[in-house]
Length: 304
Image (tube, rainbow, N blue to C red; front, side, top):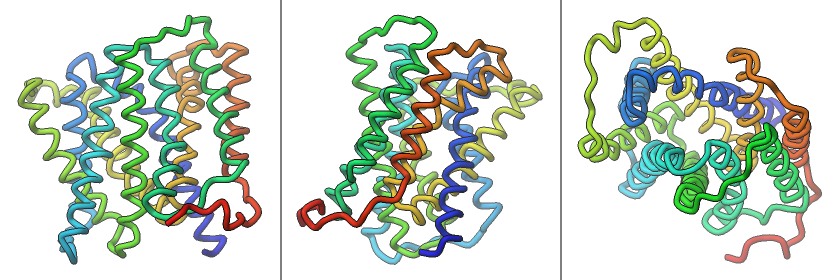
């Protein structure tokens, strides 16, 4: 892998996280007019249409096994992850969800080791993980809010983290098939939308033209659909292809940092000293996890 390719991977992951860290603002605005499942379905429908416009070439999987991987990626990364996260938010604090979701890199490393025969992460990965999680806890609870244990909501958030780790692992496997990233992302979106339909039927999907003629709603939906969905899933999948699922997933640590900074700049929310300290620890954990390690000994490799 050349240095230019590695840089492209890191920049792709960074761009993705910078956008994903700001999506809460658009979602918060849209929740005044749409339900969570309606926002989810519309944003990915826009993203799916955008990817068709960018490339109209049809993807023809070379085997049924490849199709199964696309199906599972759509189920995990598009449907289950967002549904579990949204439902978790109704049962537990947003701060809890933010911290618990951030354990996804740990499960990603575990899955890559078990299913892709990758190497066991070294000391720097785990040290970075502990630093980052400590920092994220300071960011989430630094405002003085008491830590609240809500078993069902916290369990759903943990399930979301596991599901996202599964998606990242599936994406890494899909990248080895050699298909264009835009095409594989579009295929994943298709299955994600299909799996959302039963939820739409059960929870209801009631939208009217007036909701889309509102400029604020339209701009926020386009941001989520074109930016946070179409663009970001392509750049995330590209980063996974270049860097691997583990190194890319570590960028998830930055989401609470970006969210906090964005809240201060746009919503004028106060950043506490604890949150500033947490941001420093989180970034330190990210850099430590991403730093190069000495060649691992064979004893650290996963057993086939």
